[in-house]
Image (cartoon, rainbow, N blue to C red; front, side):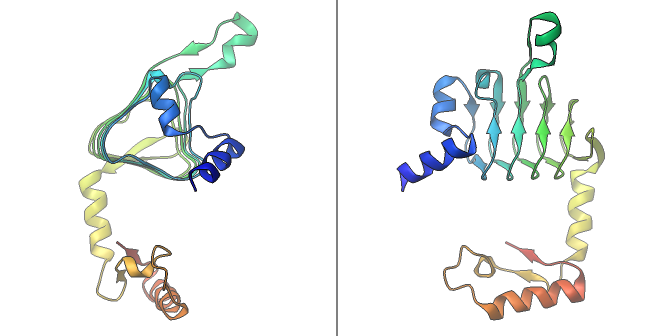
Length: 182
């Protein structure tokens, strides 16, 4: 299974986390990256990722900007720091020189070109802070009820995940607009 993972990583342009760490990437505890994530392999030693960080599919973290190479014959390089307890949504791009604080959510498809303060939610192109993390979580909690909250059995992690469970979640989304799964 490990060899298959390595082959898939190469085909997708991904490098193994172990290889990136050996090159100097700093990663904290409980780090999780989904498929298609690219952590700048040519300058990974300029990247530091804290504890409890999740990178959703197709996130890109860049520590270099080669736009100047053609014109100035030099590539710009800058450190990137991602704090603790950070979620970066699918398809987001983190540009060189950016610091993301602790307890941050970056919305899907965002381009982070400037520092993002701790305890915040940022979205957009370029990413801008739209609210505090506490405000966001309180708003989401208000949407939750006994009919639209599901446990981990309602995911593909459950080998016995059934059509009945799928339909129950679909109905919840139709009734309440969304569902929540642990």
